[in-house]
Image (cartoon, rainbow, N blue to C red; front, side, top):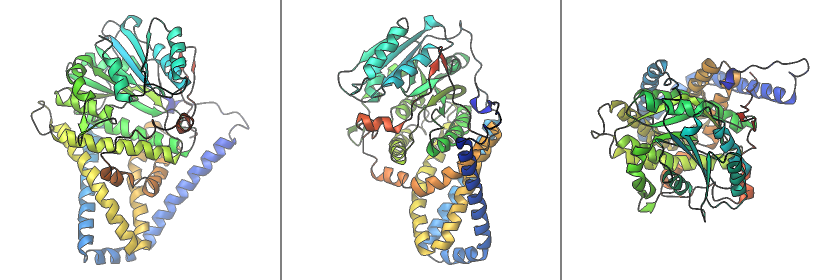
Amino acid sequence: MNTERMTSRVFPGQFFTRDNLYDMSSKAMIFIALLTTILGVWAQRDQIENVLARLTGLEWGVAYLAVARFLFLINIAALIWRLGLVLFYRPARSCTDEELPTCTVVIPAYNEGRHVAETIDSVAASNYPIDKLQIIAVDDGSADDTWQWIQRAAARHAHLVTPLRLKRNSGKRKALYEGFIRNSADILVTIDSDSLIEKNTLRNLLSPFVTQANVGAVAGNVRVLNRQQGLIPKMLDVSFAFSFDFIRASQSQVDSVLCTPGALSAYRRDAVMKVLRAWMNQRFFGRKSNIGEDRAMTNLILKQGFAVKFQSNAVVFTQVPVRYKGLCKMFLRWARSNIRETVEMARFVFTRFRQNRLGAQLNFLHSTSTLFGATFMVFGTLLCILWEPQVFLAQILFGAELMAAIPGVFYALKYRSSNALWAFAYSLFWLAGLAWISPYALLTVGNNNWLTRSLPVAKQTQLASPVRPVKNGTLISPKPLSA
């Protein structure tokens, strides 16, 4: 089901609803901001040339421009390479009931309340052979009524669901571990407890294990469930589409998806069991790791020589933060995990870990250059703004919008929707409110806090909007945003 291509009949009087008017006015403002930025840079073109000439006379200016040009060339080369890969990307064919392997879905939950029951319901409604499916729902010592909701769902699906409760909150990695060791299925699937899947998601997710013998893990296609709940979810929906349907699709073509997301991923059980102890006891700077369990498992699977794929038609809808504070905490956790696992990957990616490793090495080099180069650029950009604020603010805004054109155009072509304009809003939002995250993550990379899991229950629920219900065993997919 492609929810973005869904159409709905608009009756007279329905078009000018408050939501539609708000959406149209927001997009109009984005368009005006784009036009204003372009005209502003054009009007300052002579002054910009003069300032750039003066910048080359400064030592730090020369270094700043050199790094900027290097990153520009690297990203253009990577874009062309990825574009070629994506053009030939196709998801693995959907397998028959007889071909599908046995599967255990592990759903870790902490202070999710009724959300976890809806996640279980969506998995139980899957178009997957019932004799090959098991669901293990793990309550990670929740302080709310999560356990009661798990028990209710288990009662509804007694033939499928095994409820498990940890005595105290031990972290997501521990919850997954307890589920992993309590099964003998061929494939292990992880789904976050605030996520919902479509009926054919499991079938599609597990098909690559059948069609390609060396597949060790498969990443699902994550989309935003609560995208009608504010500006942040709308912007993230466009960002997620590019991250999965473009970036991970290209990585999949060279068997090297760098991160299988916690929202939905599948792993070959034999590959997991070989590294389960190392994964569970992973340490960074001498401290046990409590974050980045998905990226860590991906590294351990790749290190064994397995291919890691992306399946675009294995769709999961997940909740994202609706407030700035919650978004920053989520991104900061991801950034720290990315830095840690980049260090871990550096230890094996240039060894003979498998035969076709060039694609993994190129993905690693691009990811590393972007990570550390972007951090350097943040500090250099701040110096430029302090030096010539009027000129560089206009240039930086123009550069941000130029880069946003890539995911924006991709989204517009793939989904034929004016929601692509949210890519430009997101670029400005990132520049003003999120650019600090990568440098701060580097400075605090040893921090193990989950950030959102440790919040009091009342605040935890504020980070996400109510999930969309499951009706008659079928996920009611999010309605498309106004085009």
